[in-house]
Length: 258
Image (cartoon, rainbow, N blue to C red; front, side):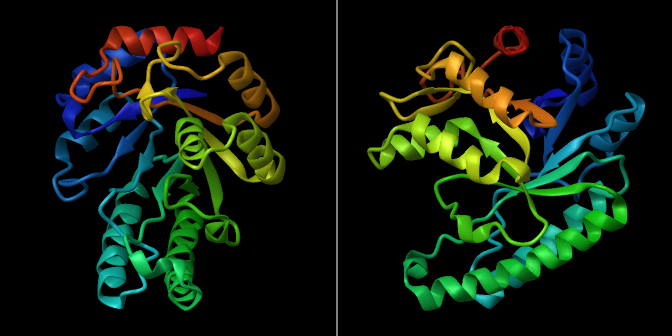
């Protein structure tokens, strides 16, 4: 299945969903950034009206590996609210980033506290996911470490995030992608697909508008064979505010399918 993103900025949802379905997308990954799920009537109606089986992306302002208990508890409360909300739909998967924003996380004792907190979050997420019938995934990013891959949690491999981080640390992104897929192939449920300007360290570009080797990307997708591929294109060019249009989304979809 090939999907794309849906978020607060895409309202009215019905109009957006109709256009994306006409283009040919199979599903949507809905971002639950504030004010969702607290103010969700329009979103719920659109999902029901179009008889969708959506996926969901957790809000980005929850810190589930924070070693500070007060912050973790608040984040866990929001996570639980989101999981119970998505449980009312035929949800495909629930994806989230593992953030902490803690400079001292590099010290082993602090890191251990953060991972213990994350284990509690996983216990809750995996239980509710099992109860409601959807998968739980974590996504790689600048904070990601393989220590976060715990138990039955699945992975969302974001190609652009990995390429950017490889370049940031002076490594070859192709080698890093190969190694990640070799080690975690059986865990990868979702792949987020977008192009990247490695020279400007800017991602979420339409396919073919950046510097990724698309033949190599094709090989990676063929090797991993993800159940879900999500075109996560936000920008038309490597310039904040230059938003991608439906034209760029359709071009990226056609290129991915080809």
